[in-house]
Length: 90
Length: 387
Image (tube, rainbow over the protein chains, first blue to last red):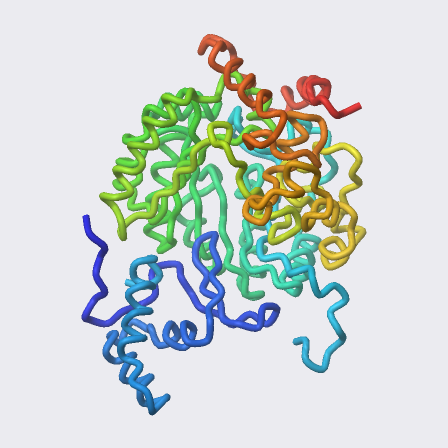
């Protein structure tokens, strides 16, 4: 079976996953059953926009609005594909 | 937190990420592979609610993020919901590691309301009679009901099947059961030979052929269920030629607090001679983590001997497991003898042959207080380094 592809519809964090800021590590982390991933700044910014209402395209548009200049669409898409393959989002 | 505050007294020691709270050694099950110490019945008094709450607060302040609520059977504690609520308000990701005994649908809901994040339910087998036989308690039907209750309460669920010689051939049945119960993750937890499992090693260690067959089955399901259910299967380290990166390094991310408050760098460390393990009732979590001899003894790599000291892989596996090194060679600072570079690898191979020559008629020693009193002495005589 091939990798489940990134949904074109609204995406949300997978069940039991959450993002929170950790003072001791001075970064955002993704938490899930028995696991922790430290997030870099861009990963954290993207994942915080994953809220069950926005699609991947909405998230890219939102970030392009917040950070005008370079087009971030491809980078956002690439990260979300990885997050999807790792089971962080559905 | 650091800016403008006091300088960090030990900048090279990173904070703990994992706190494993062994809330009690009491357990309705008697599994012969339990990782609890064989002499658990001789340990001190189990800590009360207030003391555990202080431990949770102090460890969280240090940076601990993942909290394992374990035992024994943590559901034995009637204050579990109180501890979960505290953990939730502190910002932990809380994991309940349970047999399911002591749970009912209402309690699953109460734990969800208290803020518990995830539940891991262990099974002894996919087959009811075998499950109950290995657990030493009639428990299978209840576990099935509780796995369903856990899911319907809205928890992500890990199912944990503990694997050994007698049940490894049922792997596909176990995975089918996990699919049926809608597990989010499945841990195919190969028995690790510490505590009770070490006592029963000859009887429980599977053959290499069994392991390879099981590995193929697990890989088939993994490929088929990718993206739907995560499956973890780890080959028993006796059959590897490099050691596991035990605890991700001693005193690196993990702290265990035993029911009596003893703080340990891993579940099995209490057996190591020449240690005075600190207790959370008399020393702060911060001091235990940063300055205690117990947590610093095998931190980093200054303690290493050859072949680890000069090994390019030492940053990957940290020399393996200190307890395993002790159990086989009598010196916890030796290389984990699982490693083919260890001069003592033959000891692991001898353990494998010894298990191969042990028949299934050999009785299993169940984990219970009576056997704890009886075998605590025997095991300490077996350990080569203990005096």
